[in-house]
Image (cartoon, rainbow, N blue to C red; front, side, top):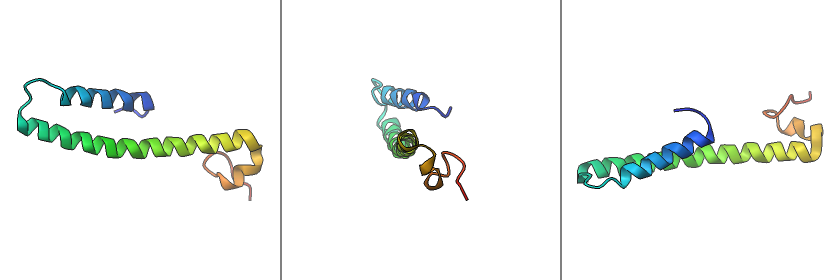
Amino acid sequence: MKNKLSDLNNHLFAQMERLAEEGISEENLKQEVARAEAMVDISDQVLRVADTNLKAAKLFADHGEAVLPMLPSVGKAQT
């Protein structure tokens, strides 16, 4: 798996295709549903982190270096 949101999107759509397969056995469907649920849980976390990073970048863009001490992962924190 790659580490871009577009890759996450591709994996989620591929999972939807597996769930929609015609003639999938009940056992395989149960496995795919469990897999899909795990993928959704992880995807939610990935998207929360991406949203947090976006909010931090917006704070930096709006307020400049003054916010860096509160956002050490965006830039160098002042000591």
